[in-house]
Image 1 (tube, rainbow, N blue to C red):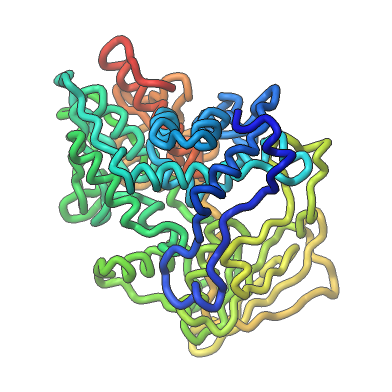
Image 2: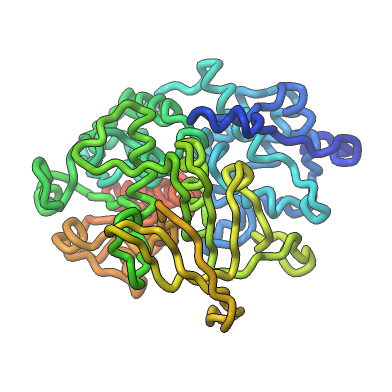
Length: 485
């Protein structure tokens, strides 16, 4: 695919970022796209390798090579190289409902499994994917795909994150009547309220929601299911009205840090902090919640993953005096051993765009307690740990902090309300038990996919599961399905 000798003739050249001093002034996206010529040149580097691991193995196990939605990467690279952008868009959308999401926020396991990554020069797959879909939107090629026939079946999708959106769109396109129930004011889930606008501006979601509404999907906003809120819908009522119910609510129970001083003012979960800023950017009212702001404060982020990185970038843009990120894991190697890791996703040192904006990173650090005065946090009391996470005597130290953000991941979906009222069986990790064969829960005609089923994961895995869940629901309702898995 591409140009057979392209990888020998053309160097890898990826998108650049606006300078730090400029991009931290606002919450807008700051990635600078490649020119059309540069994008086609990069697509030409796809080398027609014998086994294109970038496709993905089709396995449901995280960490396996390639793309979880099985994008036909060599094919769309060839189409871009030859200038056939519209066909590249059709190809890309055949496996991925929302490539504009993954082209911005996916960590690109496809590039890790690229044959050219053996010498650290993979094809710029993520950049090419984003260029294809952005060009498709700009050219008017992305249109509603309205089913010519209606099945008469009604389906409720609870949650409008990437899994719910993917399931809803697929089901609507085969003629089902689809209703999406969202507890917040707008659709998107973590895409809308967790991922900062500087990584993905929310108009990207709005235009896709408009497409889905034109395809017949009905969105019910400010409508929680199973909660003790005004306007909440009882899950049992959904079972009476709808032929199938898909639970796609995500994994929202944050991992806590129950140590002395945890109750001091100024210590917050990341997902209490990040959504506030997203709402500010979109002029969505915060309601009666107390504002959490980093401006003028020494900020400590506990947790070294993507959520922690998002806290860093947001804190810097709010005007934090300093930002320190703590990670209990040891510092990873600067470079992986290709002979042992390729084509799998490797553990190695990575620096996010937010971390590069001025955060101090500390590895192998355990926070033992918080302390403060007048009820407000002022310090973290920390210690270095060994490879078994045991404290190393004599390595104790303190960090000044006026705002602490807990970004240590999510343990499972929230059990109170929806899940308990439905009585669905949970797995040992506290997620909804459902097989990837049919995505059915222990409750008749109730299905589940995405983080609510698999635990916290990537947006691209949520899209995959939403698509597969839609195929399973269609099969369940109609006896057969034309939807791809």
